Image 1 (cartoon, rainbow, N blue to C red):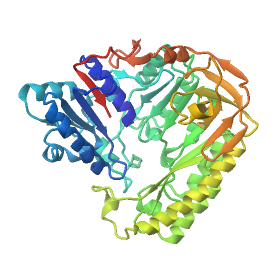
Image 2: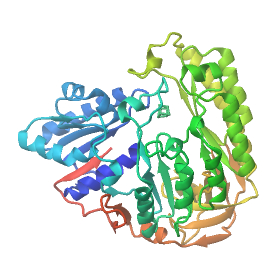
Image 3: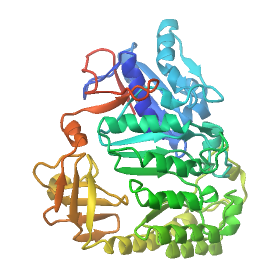
Image 4: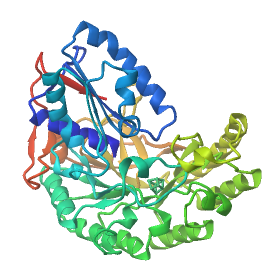
Length: 474
Ligand code: SF4
C-alpha cells in the first residue's frame, strides 16, 4: 500500500511541475513516505533525516517532506527532532503535499498537517506507475479490526471502500494501456463492501474484473480468515484471470494467542479454509504471515504454530519476530519475551517452513509454467545468464535468458530445478508472447493514471529531467 501511495505522490508532484532528479544529482525536494509497521522504523527515519541536514545546509532551498504512517504517528515531533524538515503530512491527506510544499516555501516555516480521517480517497489522485505490466489498484483503505499487535487502525483509520465502478474503471484504464496484471489492495479485502452493505462485494468484484478483456492476472492482498467466504473461493476458481495464489495471514497457530491478538478465527477454521481452497484449486499456492514471540507465548503455543505450519504446507511465509509497537495494546501486555527465546523459536519456525517451501517447489519440477517476465526480480540474472518473472501462482522463476524476450512479455518454460525460494528453468523456452507491456517496458514507458478522470490515462516517459525542481521519493 505504501509503494502504491508513493506512485500517487510521484504522479501528483509530476502534475505540479516537479521532475525526477537525475541520478547522482542533488535533488531540490526529497519526500520520505514512511511505514510504521516494521521494527525500528522511527530510528531509521530519524537516522536518515540526519543525513539530510548537511544537504539542507549546503542548499537551503532544498525541501524535505515526511509522509506516511510514521508521520501520522509522530506528527510535530518530526520537526522538533529534525527542524530542517519542511513538511509533515499524514496518511489521510497525501493530496495536500504540493500545497504544503508551496506554503512552507512561501511562509518560510515548516508545515505540519495531519488529518484524523480521509480527505480524498487516494485513488482519486494521479499516479505515476512503476511498471508497464503490473499495477496496484486500491479497493479500500483502513481497517475495522483491532488486532492487538497492529498499529494500522490507529494510523490508517476505519475502513473506507471504493465504489466497485471506480475500481473497475481504474483496472480498465490500466489494461487499456497494456497492463496485464493487477493486484487489488486493501488491509482486509474480504470485508470489502461493509461500507455499502454488500457482504459478497469482493467475490463480485473478482468476477467483474475477470470480464475485462486483456486482463490476464488478478491478484489481491490481504484477505482475513475471519471474513473469508466460500463465495470468494468460488469466484477465484471460476474466474480464469484470478491467479491461484492466496496470501492468508495466520499470525499464530495457538487459539489462546489468537484470542490475545484479537484475531477472531481459530486454527480449525483457518485450516478448514485452506482445505476448501485446495479442493476448489488443487494448484493453489498459499502463503502466510506469522508472528513469533507474541507476549505470553509459551513453548506449547509455539508448538501449535509449528503444527499448523506443517499441516498447512505453505508455499512461503513472511515470518516476524514480535517487537513492541508503541501505541498498540500488545506493547503493554505482560509476558514480553526475551530476545534469545524469540530468536530460537524463530529459527525453528524458519527450518520447518523451508522444508515446506522446498517440497512445494520440488513438486513443480518438470511442469510447464507461464511466466510474466519482470524487471529486477532476479538480482543475479547478469551472472547466471537468466531472466526472471513470476508464475501464475506467484512463484519466482529464473529461466534461461532468451534473445528478444523483454520484461512485460509472457513466456512458457519447463521447471528444471527447485530451491526453497525460487524455481529454475534452464532449458529452452517453450513459447514466447510479445506484449504491449513488453513494448512499453522496452521503450521506457510507464502508465500514468489521472485519478480524477479515470479511464483517461496518459502514457509516457517520466517527464524530462531538469536541473532544478528535481525530486526524489524514498
Ligand atoms: S486486520 Fe490487518 S490491518 Fe487490520 S488490525 Fe489486524 S493486522 Fe492490522
